[in-house]
Picture 1 (cartoon, rainbow, N blue to C red):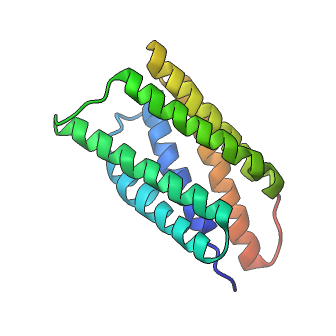
Picture 2: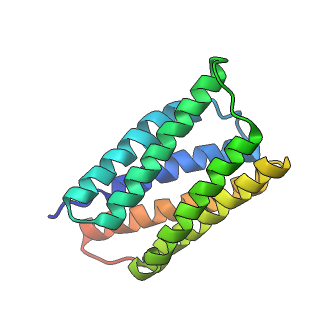
Length: 175
């Protein structure tokens, strides 16, 4: 069996994105996202990225390492806010989210060749970043971005599930 860290990377991304999306929608207050951002979304996904590079998967390595670093920086930003050390302005958060949207957009383009379900993950993530970025820039609420983020998380869980289940049962599921 060959090294494939993408299942871990997608699962870590999905769970952390789902919980943050629930906070953006208003179901939870979101404090729990900080620990997830550091350890599952951040460290586990970053490790999946490094392992993907080792397996000669430059797309996975770039995606997982980058989004792992996103979660680590997000966790630090939230921790600094909680400790009253630094709170970024809404325009700073907006620019950061829009920049991540730009990165996600250009990662979406090659994802189309990899698989339909994965390309939908990148498409919905791109939309999530832009919707949330515009929400912070113009002072809108985060619910719309939260709902799109939840769809993105569910799609990422599906791709992780389909990959690992297909590998174990030797049956290819729709990807």
